[in-house]
Image 1 (cartoon, one colour):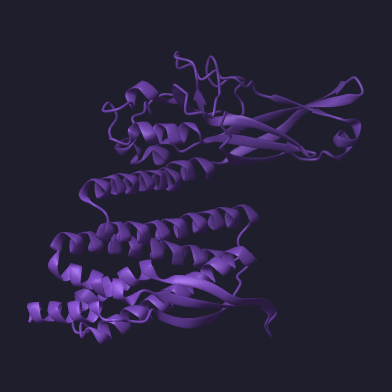
Image 2 (cartoon, helix red, strand yellow):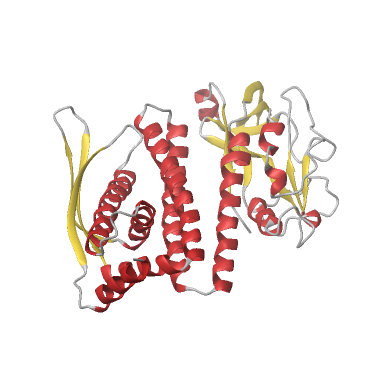
Length: 384
């Protein structure tokens, strides 16, 4: 039966076959956290899922494979990576409930002869079948994450939370697209390139873990800031702003030691480059992940009457002395420092580069408008 099925597939693939095409349209209701760009992405994802499901069912039906549940699952996964979309129309309107609705239409296409060949390969190559299952599991998790983000965006959230969710949505959609590319590599590339892709996948997952656990824990930390006093300074004024923050270091560092070696017992927490070079780190990707983190610091942003001041929380230091005195968001950083600062302390440790309180210069007009100081934690991705 197996050989007969393969024979049918080869004959089926060898014939002249038209490209599978079909038009799809969706009405996407924008949530509170949506803008037109995010809604467009979400709508196209819905169309792609519908198209891949129908394309996979079409090939399964014509090759009489519809009775094999495992193959059905794999074919739907493969077809999802092969569907191409061309938008043929879109319109933004308001429904009777006052909600914004994006109507979008797209032409979906897929080379069904290539899809059939890939189905045949799966029947005869257990290693590729295994790799497809791994990618399928990853794809399922990514789509689950995507749905959770969409649900969160549909609820009422503050501006900062919404911005974070939109960023995570963009990252997840990119990871889903990368997952599809990796699936193509399973069929089209050799062993060494597959290993390189696996390494790239591991690096992507490592960055994702660091973003969603380490950075998220820091950015969620409570911060405080208050105006301690105001001094006249020539024609203007200087406000002395006292600040502080409290990072849950245990939560931030949880699981990070699988990727990066750090000293988490002291304040500051130190990530030393020489401890993560080549084979010295806990992972073969430690050096690359160290460089990624060194380029992406976290600052405390203070805003008073439109004036903005940024103070480093997690940052790189180019010196070899591990004293955290030369902040530098650069891959050339030798040490990375995660610092705690109590609002009542003048200095956090011996060489911390910012004294508490910080001085913010204001004109007379700015001083008259100043009432409270706003404080938040933000990523700093500036590089040299």
